[in-house]
Image (cartoon, rainbow, N blue to C red; front, side, top):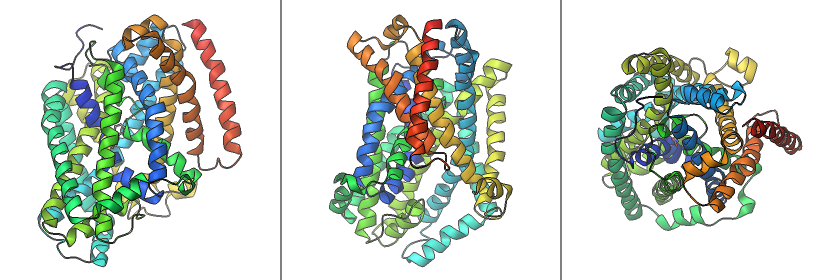
Length: 477
Ligand code: PHE
């Protein structure tokens, strides 16, 4: 492929990947999942998975992007040809595109809630409000399709604008302003939490673990969360990897992204739980932790409206730097494949995801029950879309690990990794076996009908099948 795009600086990929990784997953999902799953034990499993499974797959995904230098779909098409494997592996690209499209559709709606709360906080509307008022306010937002659509539209349009400006003028410049600001805000919120909240209780909650606290469900959620938070398995990292400088180290970059992403989740958790404990509130409020519990904590604190407003700006910025990474893989594909201009490609992706997002909007009100989704899948459209992405992401990660582990040749990988044979062997062991085994287990468990003893059995069968398949892959390589 001639004349491909490359980031302006050697370190830009790191910035872009951190921007993608740090998002609602860290600030909204991680704290509430930790809160629901009893704290430290959840974090222990989450951190272990990030390091043993997440980092190797992250390296694999970046490697596939960088060797092909194309968008995930076209890149996988190219690699299946050059490595004489089955065309079926191209589905890594297609699955990723589908997952990106679906995640963007609901991600934008939830980020829209943060827009609403930024407004409420900065206008001081919640100062001194009590629990009933605040939770009624959240319910009122969810009950209004019009309001939710408005915020959803604003959020997705802004993200589209950044990607539409191109990888240099849009994505790079946007991230260069946003990311440092986000770190600064997070530190401010942490300091605020330490002064006004109960940081001791928060630290105690987050860092003391009792493995018995953790249910099987929680264990599995921790693994799923570690994929979501690293943006793995759906092409975002592959698309950004295609622009990565050949000189940058894959291993060091992956470790840095995982480290920063985890650190931010911890700092956010520490800040949020300090405020929650300080205000004497409960930790297990689920998705409402950020939109009900936290505003309640801010309502009674000095400068709560201001710091709360700034906090929701942080949430918005983190969400934007992630949503642009959801638009990029599909937009880049449309440009490469159909010779579209970038603005055309971005418009198509975003308008489609916007329309799809309306399904999430109505899932909280007019279509909250009694729809075809409830009849067929016993869940709302939003929950169904979320379930699909919960299947696509691990499946994508599994296939990425296998393709990189078995189809790429040793010399190719050694050249990309640029390290010694020991690390090469360790990495290959991780992507050939450890990652796929862990992921297929989680993958099976996300199918609600599969429970109890069926899981290990099917899991084992799948792993064996996958192994056999991989052997064939290797011979043809
Ligand atoms: N990692 C992002 C977050 O934590 C979510 C995301 C997933 C972004 C997949 C891009 C791709 O919020």
